[in-house]
Length: 217
Image (cartoon, rainbow, N blue to C red; front, side):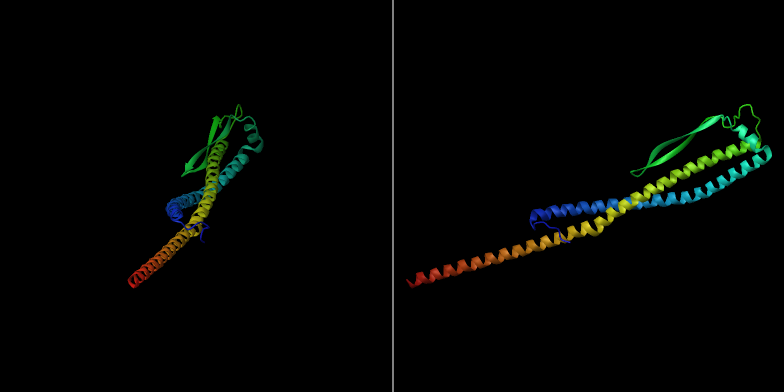
């Protein structure tokens, strides 16, 4: 589509500069899109593996606590955990993937998770607590990757729209307008040249007529 502008040399030069900028912007955005997609695919692959690991960890925790409950007894386990010796604090910060900020989580354990006060514990309970801590780390890492994949997918979509707008709308419109203005300027030059030639022929004819009159007189 030809842009609605005056076909002048000044506009032509402005459009040529704009075209160069649009082409450079398109290349940069295309490179950014490719890099975002590469990072996205890597995170998706890591997420798949971590989901499998999370399922294994959850199953291991469930089986471990079930075994401990069967040996130690549910009431005893409840008594052990009635006064926990530790608590967890989840901290969040951000890291950058290209110019995109993605979350990063970290678990801080304050105290001793194996401190059950005066109650007597069992190695089965300790093993369950340890597996629970491993599962928590896995789940937080999984949450981190899934949030990063969502943000990357949104950024890829935004970048893709910009790339397509430049590639299929802005650059073709500018190119078509440059061709149109170039053609119009060429037509104007030919029209001016034709007028000049007609004026020249008219002046020559007038001079010839004057010369003929002077010779007659």
